Image 1 (cartoon, rainbow, N blue to C red):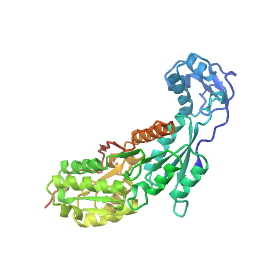
Image 2 (cartoon, rainbow, N blue to C red):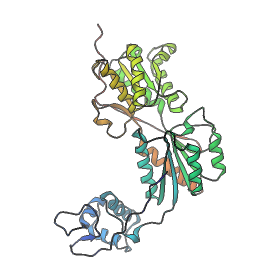
Image 3 (cartoon, rainbow, N blue to C red):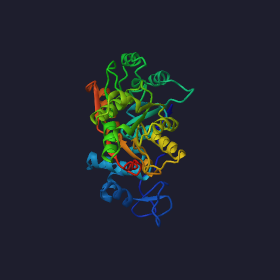
Image 4 (cartoon, rainbow, N blue to C red):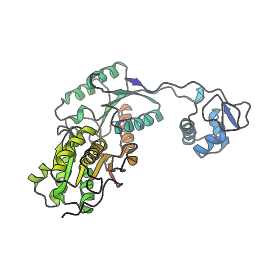
Length: 376
């Protein structure tokens, strides 16, 4: 469990050897200015305000709108400058963030946005990551509650596992700790849920491949274990899309491979789907999609000329894979912001609707999909 809200070292007040500069040994000094200084012009440009406004904010002067003041403080953070001591907020409290792992880049992407939004509201995020052989979700929650957290954000936790006991969340609610859950709706838990439309994501991917000319009978799905809610929903969307194209439901089941949500899982699923004659594969995550690409190449197939691959998530750097991956993008920023806002409403005593807020994904077409090879 890592406390991510450690306060930085203070920056001395304005005034020093360089005109228009803020002394204090902050990084990113403008070439030509005094050593260890940062010009007001840099901060003003980043915040799209005047240097005079920046000066008033840094010196704690009145006459600056709250929104403008926040823009200046955000510019300091973006540029890597430390905030003057008098401008630092006391923490409004601790918020726990429980995520399953950090190896899948979509989880750090969510964590970063959640922590940024929390920090903007004055809260200190406490990141808890589950690792093989490490603390369980229940143990992490106990540690967070003992630390007196104001609330908890769960990302792809046990709430998404249909075989897990939802009673743990009922008990947490009974302990007076507000929480919000991302990715994986559970009707037995009374709390705000935030999810992407997994069914729509699978339908988008199938429709894209069909529009490229792929035979619906030769489109496969590689997804994680069936016990997870997002997996079931993707499979449902995939099935509905193929049935719309005239594929019998019994045949669709043969075109679905359940495996691990990893690169290795995608690699394993690809073997069966390629052997079955698939020319296009829809995947439950970007990591799985990269595993499919690797499996195809090991079989001497070119992607996308001989096999098209569609991922899911659009996590960092996926646009720079070889080939750049066509994927269905999770609206990470919108989902993370909604989750934090719902949690803060709960903390503030203004409960939001205890139901699921569903966000629409977006198909991002890149270089891993193309028309199918010509059949002889």
